[in-house]
Picture 1 (cartoon, one colour):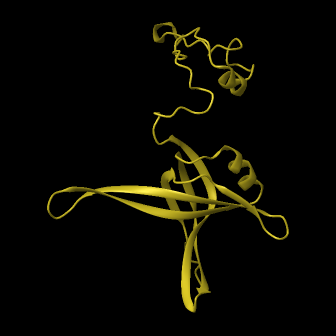
Picture 2: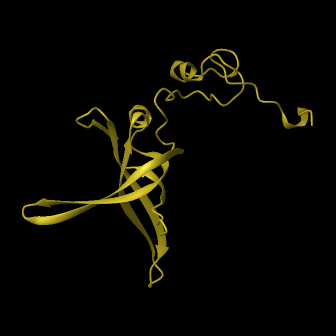
Picture 3: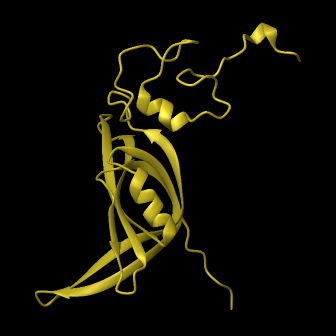
Amino acid sequence: MTDGLNKVILMGNLGADPELRYTGNGTPVLQLRMATNESFVDKNKEPKERTEWHNIVLWGSRAEALAKVLTKGDGVLIEGGLRTSSYEKDGIRRYRTEVIARDLRFTGRRSMAQPPPGLEDDSDATQPGAELPAAATARLGNGKSGARGRPPEVPVLDELPY
């Protein structure tokens, strides 16, 4: 018998901060609410937008790590499979469909009107030699990112050796 294919790929924004919980045996479970938007033109030639909400679940050590960095508004790409469960509430059988995520990729923030924490400084840190805020410097570290507190020097295109 041939196996089926249960694969979902979604790209959207988190509608709320993630919720990290643990099962009875201590396994981490991360629950996310994700919104995907669709723009279309209706039969009256009016532009419309529709938002779909998705329940996303991540399991294991990756769930713990992602709980520390994901926040409301983050853009993400999720790859996983659908799982539907049922339960009874007030004598009525209800169903819940979730995406069990196997992979999560960052796609950026929904808008840069709200900069990431630590980058609220008004100075233009994109200019070579400009000082970065202390929080950003701590994230960059001292590796190949240039002198401490400065972004790496970017060569002018005319100076490239090839």
